[in-house]
Image (cartoon, rainbow, N blue to C red; front, side, top):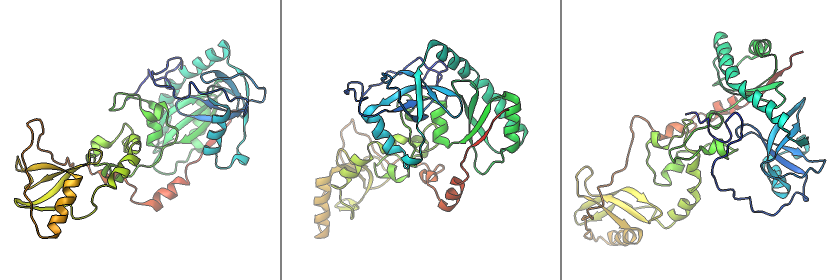
Length: 365
């Protein structure tokens, strides 16, 4: 689902989404460090050096040096926070080249950037046609033109290795610009395209997330969520990134639950757990699955009490009467679309593929 109105994916880049700015009221720390984090199209961010000590704040459009040429971006972090972000993201700072910030962007710079953005969609469509004509097993997910309109990054998705030699020649002849090929995954593609999630908000990957970690199906089961793969998948077709946001709180709440003997022996028969609400500290049980009126819920304290009674051979009575507002609860299972299909089953194969991710550049003389 494309989101042309999202703040990070529109052509002009002038619109903003109505989200809370949690660092807006922090004190100015630009005197503590000259490192500046600059955001470009979508979630691409790079670090630059403010050697000229230009007065910058978040949201300022700046012209930065690239190799070669220049680009136009938006200031994301400055001072102390930018330095901390640089330390956290860059593993080998001594090998990272900090380019310079030239100046604040003028109207002429912004007009040139808008013209470059308008070239992106037609270029992407034509690039896909060329790749298809060459029979390459790949997909051009997006095209990003640099602010000087002389270079473009072609983001692509491919399962295996792709021979770009002929493709880059075709692109260079067709578009008359410097070409850079950059491989991305499904999550990065969703961030580039943009869209609205099931929560009704702009996708996290296209609005603020910059790191994309692999999410295991255990994150779903440990929170007691629906095992339906269709509900847990995001716009990228992978497990939703937001499944990690509250995982620590659920893991802490799970410590209060018994880890064994969850099947309870009652006077009416064997009760098996069908659903767990970790935050409310409740467990739903069913005496005979499939029959209405045989489901009930117990608090963790009551479950522990019944477990101790079962160990002494006592089968207590339980009430299966529910309020009219409470419906019979069952685990929602999708047999045709298993949740564990998101997990990596062949780590060696994926590790080998990771080595294939690299960039190719070709300059037009």
